[in-house]
Structure formats: structure tokens, C-alpha cells
Amino acid sequence: MLKQRTAEGHSVALVKAIKKNGTTFSCEITSAVFTDEAGIQKSITGITDISQRILDQKNIDIKKEKIVAGNIALAKSTQKKIDIRKDKIVAASIDVAISKQKDIDTKKEKAVAGDIALAKSKQKKIDIRKEKIIAHNIDQAISKQKSIDIKKEKIVANNIELLISAQKNINAKNEKIVADNIALVKSKQKIIDIKKKKAVVDNIIIAKSKQKEIDIKKANVVSSDIKRASIKSHREKINYARTAREQLLAEIEKGFRGIFNSSSDVLFDSDLLANKVMINDAYEKEFGYKKTHTSAEAEDWLNHIHPDDKEVVMHDYLRMLASAATEWKYSFRFLKADNSVVTVLSKGIVLRDYNGKAYRRIGYLVDISKQKVMEERFGQQIRLREKQFDEAMRDAKEAERSDIGKELHDNVNQLLGASRMYLELAKRGGANSQAHLSRSSEYTLMAMEAIRKLTKGLTADFIRDLGLCDTIDSLASDTMEATSIKISCALKSFVEDSVNGKFKLNIYRIVQEHLNNIIKHAHASAVNISLLQNKRSIMLTISDNGIGFDTEKRQKGIGIANIKSRATAYNGMAEFVSREKLGCVLTVRFPLTDEFPDKL
Image (cartoon, rainbow, N blue to C red; front, top):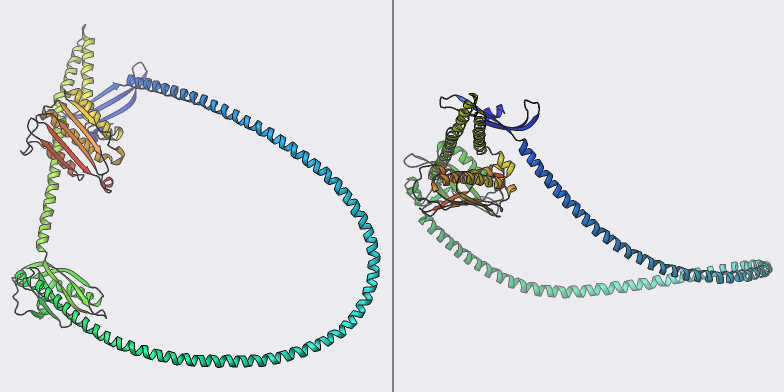
């Protein structure tokens, strides 16, 4: 607390303290530093027992918790009953469905089981009969087949031997016959294939020859027609294009020369191949050099480049010529005919041939020294406005310090003086000593409350803790408690999380400043404060029904200038609309953009 009080002039802390009887209690320690009339720095420290406040808050919290717990229990009980009813209905429905399905399944199972048992019984009997018949038949068949197989095997063996011998002879004969036939067929097929190939080749050659002759004739005819048409069309196109191009170039050149000679800007046309440059009449007017002819050597005007800049200018110029650039722009110092130095900008387009070689450059030369002077003046104006803003901020701080000094002197000092007076009376004893102590305590508490309100106006932590809207509501409540002004606030559309603490403090200071001006000067009985926010802007409006003022007249105080400066600091605009005896309306609008939250 001592470090904070030394750094900021005041400090507040919540601590546990021990009474004389050994019991502990919660208290709030408030301490502030001030300088008395003799210039001596003094401090005021007060200790307030907040046990009752904490106890009251605790009781409120307990009541709230009980109410919430009761509501939750009631809701849970109601929900439980509803769930039990639903469970019963669902369970009953499920039981009925299961019972019905069970009956159906049982009937189906019995019917199926009966059918299966009957089918199995019948099938079993059939299978047994079949097995017996098949076994008997198999035995008989095996016995008969065995005898037959023995006989067959003997017959087959004999036949096989005969067949093998006969087949062997037949195969040998067949192989010879087949071989002879294959050789004969191959020979005949070969002759046929040779004849076919010759016939096909002859036909193809004849067809190709005929087609070639036809194609050559057609091609000659078509080629002759195309050549004649092409030559005629080409000549016509060349003549037309040449005429159109010449006319277009003539028109362009004529228009260019008209613009070139009538322009108030310095224009040039450089023939890079001939090293010639043509400059219009504005060159003499702008830089003072007399023209003896329309075309001159390029070196004639290049020599007017400032000697210290000529090397770098020519280096970049040659670099541009060697590249494929179609534009060249460069700024350099230039010597006028009266030997004065100006800064010029040379800018032009570069014309190149099909091989990329530059052959012509057309452009302008402009004195940008005046522009630099204007930029310097504009910069001076900006710096002047910044200086005025800093001065306004310093004046605001001085005014704030002055108000704090007045408040401490005129209010807190008087309260503490009264407290000390009653304390001295209590020290003397007597029947009224206890009453004097009570009065001294009351004045001390009043002084502490005044200091608390004063420190509340200096710190920004309350905005972070309470939020901007609640802080403005609190300021309005304190103002209504201390004055007869009725204040209404409309702040619900403002989104606290959309901006940071510095921006919110800036808005609060504007409200604080203007409300203070209304209290001091407006003699108003009603004030309306609204803070509106949409996708495009945040708008603060404060209106009163006071005596108003003439906005055209210069105001003595710095309150209005301070409000406008605070608005400008965040790209906003503050506007006062007021007429004498008709009240005043302050409107401060801050634009919202994508970058806005990052700036705040």
C-alpha cells in the first residue's frame, strides 16, 4: 500500500485486523497523500470495519443459494415425476408389446416345431426304407457287376490287344495319307496366296496411281485458285492495312502533336536511335531555358541535371534501356536557367521493336518541389495539432489536479477539521464526551467516503472490474445523490467485449467531463445518456435541458476541446448542438472497421 500510495497518491486494501480484545474482523484501509497550505506533504489513512457489509452480503448469497437450491430441487422433483410417469408409460407399452410378441413367437415356435418334428419323422422313415432298398440293390448290383466286370475285363483285354494292333496299322496308313494331303494342300494354298497377293498388290498400285493422278489434278486446280485468290486478297489486305495504318498513325501523330504543344506540362519525345529529343513550349516557361529549335541533342537538356545526381540518373537510365521495361520513372535534382535547384520527376513510356530494343520514349517532366513544400506544411500542421492535443491533455490533467486539490481543501480538509475539533472536545471529558466522539467518527467517515469517491474518479480499475455500462450507471447514481439532477441511461446495446479497456476509459472520461460541465454551467434538471453500437459505429449521446450555449463563441474552459481531442484520438468525431435556453446535445461517433479493435 505504501508503494502504491507513493506512486499514485492513494491506495486501498482489504485486510484482516485484530481488535484489542483479540477478535479479528475484516476492514478496508484507505490512504491518501496531500500537501497542506505550508507545502508539507501529509497523509490521511482510514480503517473501516466492513464485517457487517460482508456478513450482509453473505446472508444475501446464502438466501440466493437457498432460493436457487429450492428451485433446482423443485425442478428436479418435477422432472423426476415426469420422467417416472414417462418411464411407467414406456415400460407398460414395452411390457404389452413384449407379451404380445411372446405369445406370437410361442405360437409360431410350436407350429414350426410340430411341422419340423412331423417332417423329420416322415423323412426318417423314408430315409430308412431308401437306405434298406439301396443297400439291398447295391449288394445285388455289386455281385452282378463283379461277374460282368471279370468277363468284360477278359473280353476287353483281348479286344484291346487286337484293336491296338489294328489301330497301329491304321494310324500308320492315316499318318502317311494325312501327311501327303497336308503337303498337297500347303502347296496349292501357297500358289493361291501368291496369286491373291499379286492381284491385290496390282489392284492397290493401280488404284493408288489413279487416285494420285486425280489428287494431283484436283490439287493443281485448287492450288491455282487459292494462289490467285490469296495473292489478290493479300495485296488488297496489305494496301488496306497500309492505308489504314498510315491514316491511324497520322491521326495519332496529329493528336499527339496537338496535345504535346498545347499542354501546360513539360512533355518530351525522345528518338533513342537518333539521340534527338523534342520538348514542348512549357519547358521554357517552367525551367527558363529558351528553345532555338524544336528538336535538339539529348545531351543539351541532360546537362541540366544536377552534377551530383547525373551519374546515378544515367546509370538507372542505361539499366532501363538494357532491360525489357516499358516504363521509366525517376526523381532527381534539376538546374533551372536562373541556377536555382528544383526536384523533378521524369516519367515516360518506352516503345520497343520486335527484338525488344528501345527506339522511342515519350513522357513528362514535373517540378515536385512545390508538392514537397505542401507536404512539409501539412506535416507542420499535423505536428501543430498534435502539440495542441498534448497541451489540451496537459491542461486537462492540471484541471483534474486542481479539482482534486479543491476537493481535498474545500471538502475533505473541512470534514477532517471538524472531526479533529470534536475529538479535542471529547479529550476534555465531561458528560458529552461520548457524543463528541460519535460526531468525530461521523465526520471521519464522511471524509473517508469523500476520499473514496475522489479516488474512484482517478482509477481505471473499476471499469475493468465492473464494465463501462455499470461504471456509467454508478457515476449517474453518485451524481443524482449529490445533486438534484435526474439522469437516465440507455446502455444495453453496447458490447463490452468488442473494445479494450483504454477505449472504454476514454468514453468514460468524455461522459465524466461533459457531466461535470452540465453540473457547473448548464443548470439542468434532467440528463439523458445513451451508448449505441451497431456493425458500423459506436455512438455516445448526452443531452440535457439546461440553459445551453452559443457553439459559435469561443469557450473559456478546455472541456469542449478536451472532449473533441479524446474523440479524435480514436478516429471519432464530437459534435455539440446547442442554443441558448434550449439545452445541449453532445454526439460522439466512433467508426467501426476491421482494424478498429486492433487499434483500441
